[in-house]
Image (cartoon, rainbow, N blue to C red):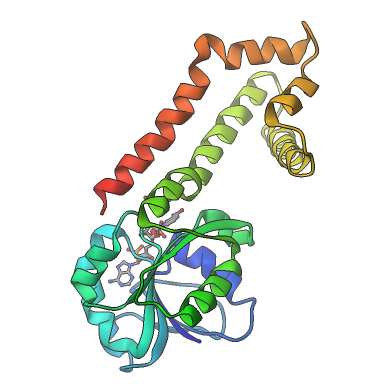
Length: 259
Ligand SMILES: NC(=O)C1=CN([C@@H]2O[C@H](COP(=O)(O)OP(=O)(O)OC[C@H]3O[C@@H](n4cnc5c(N)ncnc54)[C@H](OP(=O)(O)O)[C@@H]3O)[C@@H](O)[C@H]2O)C=CC1
Ligand SMILES: O=C(O)[C@@H]1CCC=N1
């Protein structure tokens, strides 16, 4: 497929890093200031430099607030029968149709781990998409990690709140955990190694186990032991569940506001 990526910032750039490792697609990036693009990528700084009716897929990877202003200039670049793929948070298919007219549109919500091929994306296609388009785009997105088909746009917004924004929550928890290790006297490098390896190992243990997360937690927790002492603090006042619940609910509400 011939693919146009509008916006090659943090998320578009992360996905492109994986896409270029796979054969079969040719990429053009439209971004006024993109630098250090991988070899073999065509780069334009403005829509008027693009040929008409050239691309099978146009990936919209600019900020949601810029879409209404910028996208109209790119419409002629889409081949007849091509489709738009938007990774923008919130911005609904109805809003996109208001900008581009009736079209095949697929909303995808990736996350930053796409950069290392371990992303998770939700995908929702509007009824104007053909089965072939859905299957081609699903395979294309799966080059960056897991791709979960969704049955409604609301599910895209809910998935955004869990896995789209998720790396932000996890990085913040990791940052705080590393700071706590440093306060116990470990240097930065050792603290990062201890925390990163603990998290990686714990995730892999859970993945490879049939046990529930509660049982796995209990298997670390000796009665009156060190883990029990730590968990008593972590769950002090029963606030942890409420805190994480409030976190994903706030992100979901924001997705609705960005529609
Ligand atoms: N970051 C993330 O983890 C995720 C982001 N998303 C979605 O991805 C989209 C992009 O977000 P993110 O990558 O974080 O943001 P960035 O700001 O990093 O990327 C946007 C890119 O668009 C460029 N740009 C600005 N103006 C234009 C223009 N006129 N034409 C083409 N490109 C332009 C920006 O350039 P410059 O920097 O020079 O302004 C930048 O490189 C958003 O819609 C967001 O909702 C979805 C899932 C996860
Ligand atoms: O924060 C945002 O709005 C984007 C969408 C998901 C992750 N980053």
